[in-house]
Amino acid sequence: MQENQALHHGESDKAHAVIKQFVQADRLHRQAVEATVTAQTGLHRSQHMLLMRLSRGCIPSQKQLAKDLNVSPAAIAVSLKKLEADGYITKDADLDDCRCNRIALTEKGHGVITKTCSLFGSIDRTMVEGFDDAELDALLTALERIEQNLQKFLENPQ
Image (cartoon, rainbow, N blue to C red; front, side, top):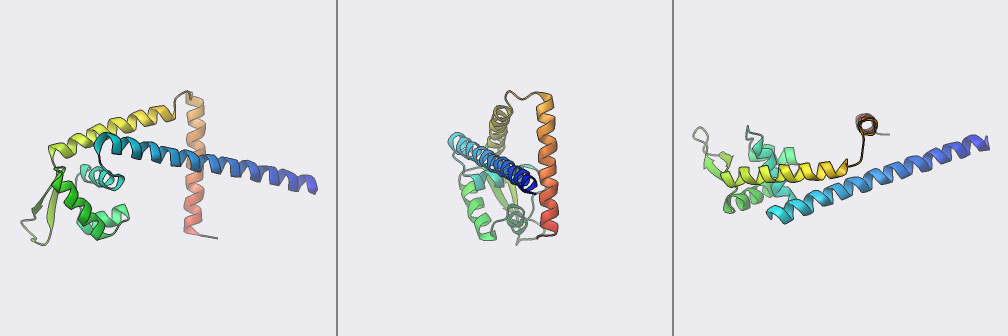
């Protein structure tokens, strides 16, 4: 019985170490992205996320943007105003509905997206440096299982 509890305790310690390392790696990735994007573009994370969302086409309403990015509509309005003032986007009244604005990336906006995609690629390559295909396959499988486990938890919290 004690051996079984010790084994379970050992597994728990190992699981805790894995989770701690996963969280730390996620934090470092976020820091690397934020520091690089801000240093290279002068944009804050929220502004960049907004530009990335706009770059995908099919521009939603400000209300939908707020929902998509999990921020308040007021925060979206402030970010859009700043991005427009800085020349990253244009806002024009919708011809069919004067209450709505059409938002479009400018050449400067497209340029910053291209630049940051390159920066992300560099960070991604650094993250997996030294891994062979088998290690990447195993890591991908493990992360997919973590995602599935968390999805199940969210569907039925304990």
